[in-house]
Length: 42
Length: 141
Picture 1 (cartoon, rainbow over the protein chains, first blue to last red):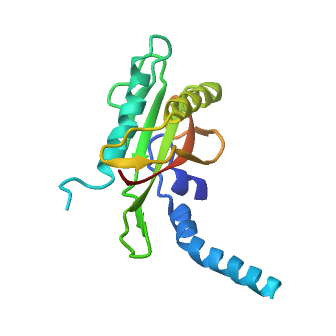
Picture 2: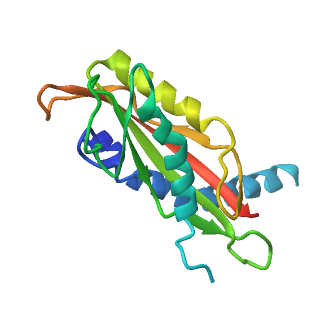
């Protein structure tokens, strides 16, 4: 049912909850990748 | 302070780009906003625009939050899977050129993607639909 909530259907609107959660997570993810890079290059 | 919501000119530009699809001589595509259009063309093809408020992020180190990222989805609907795909293709075509948004400088519309074509058995007759998510980003002009 995840698809139906996330993207909606013919008569149901999309909720995009997963998409927003991913957007929220993006800065933290990028910060971790940058930290990994910095450690690898040390 | 502007009197209109920041996302509104973006929504207007999207509707302006999509609306001509309903005037097509062959295979007109009805355009709805937030739900199916009130009148669906004879071929049963339509596309529904769902537009969000957008996310404001810092345009500079002063944290002025002038960069706007507007997420939106266009759900393409048709009586067969092929036609739903065809509608999604026409939608992608009209969203491909740069959009003119009042008072804003925009990036080209970014296609985020979505799930594959699905059949909706909750309506009679069953219809096929294809949701595709996009993103439109802009800064003050």
